[in-house]
Length: 93
Image (tube, rainbow, N blue to C red; front, side, top):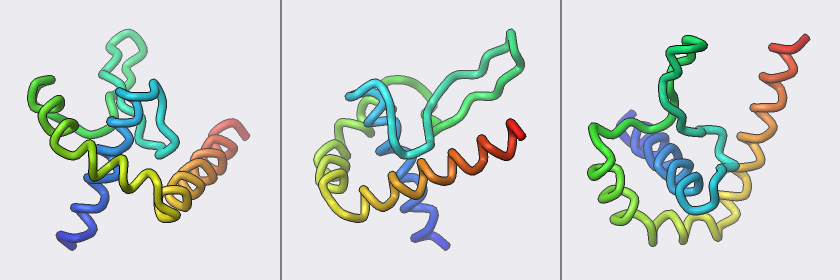
């Protein structure tokens, strides 16, 4: 179970990293804040403050960049996109 939690957290961190660097992510874990106007909860990885988030992203940047060059990343991104498309079709139909 601990390994699964580690991998899930790493993928969420990588998604946040992509958003910070590229402005979007292919990993289906986009981060956004709580929006009280439409009562939409936030999502993505949680950090107690932005300084902690910045430290975590910097500390893992080389690991995430390395992972982004692998077949594993490409497969993960493909699965996430497909899952998002299937779920959005269920919601709209």
